[in-house]
Image (cartoon, rainbow over all chains, first blue to last red; front, side, top):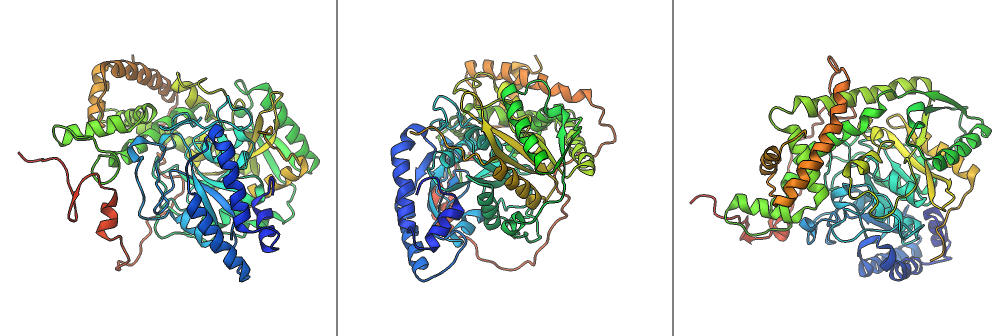
Length: 482
Length: 95
């Protein structure tokens, strides 16, 4: 049963070569054995998963065909699951049990998936290493002394270490793509609005997007098919139906023009990453694609703009944690004191830092200088991409400046941590598609990711190109044996 | 320093947070460093540039105003730290 993709599992289930119970128990036993070291899960829903597997086996026996019937997956713990606690890796939501499923979870269940549990993250998805979890950091299966990336670090580590067949994460500034790159798995941030955010705990509403982390590109296409599409419960969700991504993968590609933005390959990019990317560029040329340089001149302003816009939205979204409706409450002298004590005890340092930046940027006298200015720069960054997409079909960049860093390496310097998001943030600001594909290992045996960026709703093209390169490289990356 | 200790204290109050002396010191330094970095944006002339608040230009989407299923009060109250009947309980507001 080792190292199966979702599509392989589905095939074996349909052919009755394995049962859903067997594959579910396989992952549960791996979680039991390996997760005490990796710590990818905040909650393992063993009983529920086995019951879902049994129900799936009954349906399989009756010959029912659902797209994910009996396939064991995991879900990042900022996505609401009915009756299963959803903590956002925060003390303030430590005991929060949602009375409803997020749209994406509802769709996974309707598709017959088995849900193994909820994965760790940086508190409220704020961070790039999963070290900001209020409970414990997750470790990178490739090297337990290193971070898995973040904020969807639990999901990426769980897929890489085979503690689930695939996972859902969320991406506000790179939180799917960066951990996918650090852990050697595929991570897709869809176009803003492609996937409903109903039931995703809000961090920065104009940037947040749910997407899959998987072993293969085809698996990412399949999961997107299930979770994406219109949803009347999220007014920012795009109303048009989705194409059939898996059949799009089989379509022959024309001689695409692929852009390499010069601003992404300058100083600050580690040589090892550069070398691996250049190898995959040569593969793409061999496949008949045309590579050419493009320019995204406002790239250097993206981090500053993002770290105003995202905290501003977060400071507003996180005002709801007031000790009244749900979550932690600490007693105080009066209402104001109760609010302050609850929020000061309930939030960790990075969340408070971002609430402070955001509150400051939105406060009287500073709004124009910070929030409005950053939103104007956001326009310039989006225009850079529009211009580039007049010349090329897709854009290729690194996902991260370096491979996975060590635990503790950046926790003392928040700004250094922010700057590590430089290659992923612009995609969120412009609402584009971004896919992180593993393209090799460094000399220290750490995964390297290539980012494919496409225009709004270009998921079929992005997935198709990623699939071609995945086949050509034929890497089959697996972390060192446990 | 891009931001003073007093300003940090004021912003903390606006955000309904409170800090110890040590935290106040640390946040003042960290926020100053971060805000200094944000100054980078002032290098750009953005006069006449429309701000982007939303990545897709979707207009408001309307639906019929009709009764749909909603959550029963007991489910909504199930996570409340303190409740009474069908109400959330907060500390006394009016003396």
